[in-house]
Length: 201
Image (tube, rainbow, N blue to C red; front, side, top):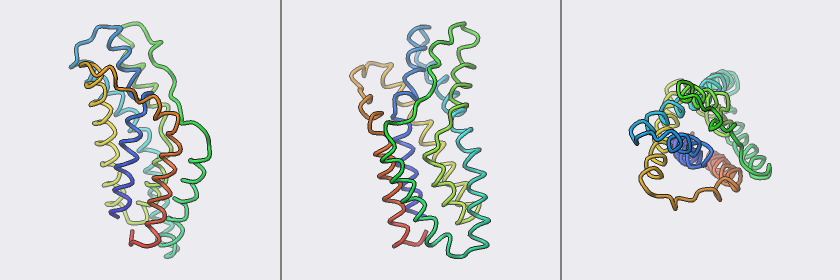
C-alpha cells in the first residue's frame, strides 16, 4: 500500500503543478482585482470541483477493483501492477499533457466562480484512475485513504501555487512541465507498477 500512496502523492503534486489547473484562476483574480484571500478561496472551490469529478470516476473503478480481487485472487498481485505499467507506458508515449477549457473567458462577476468550478468539474483527470482501481483491490479503506490523499494534496498544492504566484513569484515558470506531463505521469505509473511486483500492495 505504501507504494500506491507514494505514487498517488507524486502524481497529485505533478497534477497540481500543471499551469492549466491553477493559472486560469490566477488570471481571473488579477483581471477582477481580487484580494489574495478571495483568489485562494476560489482556487479551493475550483480545485474541489475538479477533484470531486475525478474521485467520483475513481470510486467506480475502485469498487470494480475490489470486486475483481474478490473473484480473482491473482488480480491484486499480478494484474493490477501490470495494468499500472501498461497504462504508464501508454501515457508516456501519448504526446503532450491533457488540457482544460479556458475558464478565463467567463466575465460577468456573478458567474466567474461558477464558471471556473464547472469548467474544472467537467474535465476530470484520468491519469490517477489506475491508482484508484489498484487501491480498490485492497478494500474500501485503502481506496478512501488514496482518495483523501489525492484530494488534500491536489487542492492544497493548487491553492499554494496561486498564493505564491499572486504574492510575487512571477518567475514561477511551470509551463515546461505541461509539455512533459504525460512522460512524468507515465514514469510514476510504471515505477509504482514495477514496485507492485516485488512489494505487497
